[in-house]
Amino acid sequence: MNGSVPSIVFAQEAAATWDWDFVWEILPDLLRGLWVTVQATAVGIVLALVLGLVLAIARRSTIKLVSWPVAAFIEFVRGTPLLVQLFFLFFVMPDQFGVTLSPFTTGALGLGIHYACYTSESYRAGIESVDRGQWEASTAINLSAPTVWSRVVLPQAIPTVIPALGNYVVAMFKDAPLLSTISVIELVATAERIQAMTFRPTEAFTIVGVLFLAVSIPSAALVRYLERRFRYERA
Image (tube, rainbow, N blue to C red):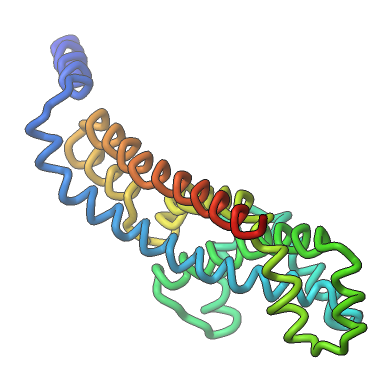
């Protein structure tokens, strides 16, 4: 028993020592995991931006049978953890409703629906920031509802919420590791597998952090660029 103690200490010291050869060995696997993470985030972003706008418009409906259920759905999703929602989509839906999706599809759908409820609130704030006179003028000249939304309201509302939408994009990317709970082998799950097989967590999780930064920082810069661009066009 006593002889095993130095071995454990030596193993711990070796695991904490940086090894560039090991980094280059595991980098291809981590890049594949990053690609899965980016794909899931990209699909989730598109769904969140489109569905969020639909929910925001539906919530403003004067028909209570439309606006109330939509409001209840938004508050329910925002009030429950993403992890619970992923569990429901992946495990409960097939058993109770017979709807079976692949782990990747389930994960991207879960991310999209979850963040759609947050983006809907951002859209709603932007829509409500449009001056009331704009709505009244549109009504006065007898514009149709689709024309009012597409030509008057949304071009003024969306630029004001770009910073908030950009924050949700970055947040979604950082929440993507939760997909590992439903068997999606993304970036963090890949690092965990490497750590389990090699007992070397230092290199794997350090590179994970670097790769997340490599995607998040350009994404944030793109959001700032879009904010300046649209703000300039509105001026």
